[in-house]
Length: 239
Image 1: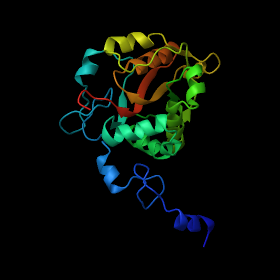
Image 2: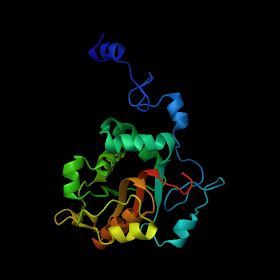
Image 3: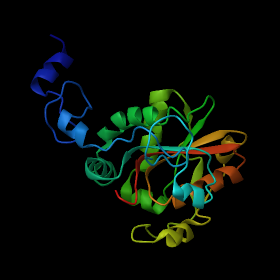
């Protein structure tokens, strides 16, 4: 018996959501899988929020019809609710970096419709002071996982955050957009990699889209031809 097989007998794989026994590493048990609100079916083509109906028609939600988005297309893996919220918070606040591996596969599947050859994957950046406190930019962790899953090129510091700013928590839509206006800029040395490229921005959660909009503006200002967005979770009005 090999070492790996022996270890699996001693330490059988556990569900990443509840520690129940599962058949493979980095998986969800049936109960947690059913409790995780993965997004499927008809979605808004610009932000990934679920829409009623079925089919492959390109539709936009009310928010994306009302708000000018600087990016072209967007998708999300799951709703920020229930087990989906638990998984995101575990990644962000409990240093559950083991979640990055399955998240990379989920992002690849959710983003398959919008990914294109030659895309450059880049995370929404964190200010360096906050990065010291947090130790990890979880958007960068997700971007790296997606790049490994798809083989696409990625740049962990295509953008920089100019000022720490305040948290977006508790702010209304207008406050969220005002809080991040002009917050991002191309990296002095790496920003040129965006020139003439289609950039795929990665973040953990999209709420109003204010942070992604500011980051997309910075990419376009750096010379990107087009920007799309992909997030692990999407906040909805009901979720």
